[in-house]
Image 1 (tube, rainbow, N blue to C red):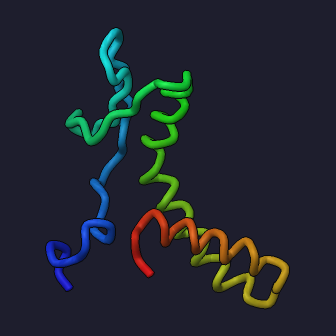
Image 2: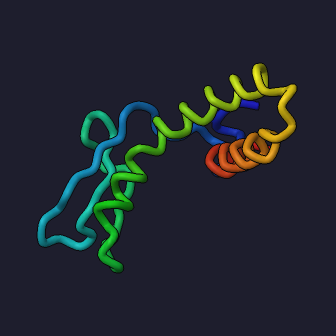
Length: 102
């Protein structure tokens, strides 16, 4: 299935490193930009956590890549350790939520 034919929730995210952008005095105060400074989305500071939420959102591509790599390693190396299965399932569920894939 081509990327264009996938449901919106299963399409790839904007690649590259995302960055936070503080818009002093504007609403919303925080923007998440791609590598060439195009705003991808906004983060409102309704509860005083705007800066922390913006940093977390900007880290999403790197967090997803790290989770995918870790899950691959866990699947290969930890298959004989059932105690890790709960953590592997949680990691897989978070990746599924982030990617929209089943």
